[in-house]
Image 1 (spheres, one colour):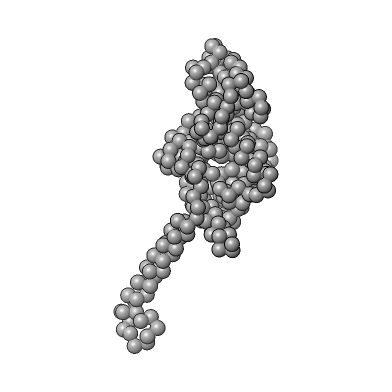
Image 2: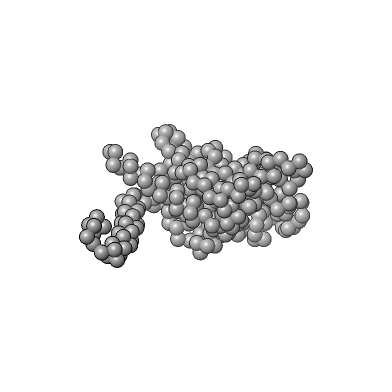
Length: 295
């Protein structure tokens, strides 16, 4: 009908609209089919730990680490996921040297797994009198929580120390020995938790974090041995890799793995990560599908 010159103009207009609708429907169905064909990561449905650490840039990096922490908390809330602070080292000026949160709920790891890597921020710090733009970095690591059956931790391999909790700037939080530091002797992994007033609660939290870190370290070791990239992430997934830039003067967020640039920095920091996450998922799906077709 579109190509027939004898068809009335009104019918041609209706055919044009219908063709547009059908093309959109086909595209949606093709994307859904590709998604169904890609093997699912069995860890996607698990709760996940998100570790945020200030990198180069001193206080500015710590301040941005705090902003990323709040961004992830807001994103989790939008996805109706529960967030629990597991570990935090504040700077006293609103920043964080490091913070570890546990995100619980259906699909938590699947929502956050692409965030692993180095996040770069470009802006003029509040303390910069000359108005020069500084570049700072924050490292993010995402690890799925593992069940007790996934890793066996022998009590004899643990050294558990208790001490008094303290807040930022040396402010006393608790005068009892409620804070817990657990060292896994075979691997050297150390976890500290002092958020709760109960030593038992801090110990339980620390063990959950420890279990996830040990499994993640073992997984990375195995992947390094076979020299392959993480199948669950776009790009290499190495923590030293710069994955995203947040440019404040240009109101720009760029994810370097897929070449996606958004000029809505404020909204992204408010937890509106769907466009980025969906872009990364689509790139991963396309990449895995291409690999399957080439075999």
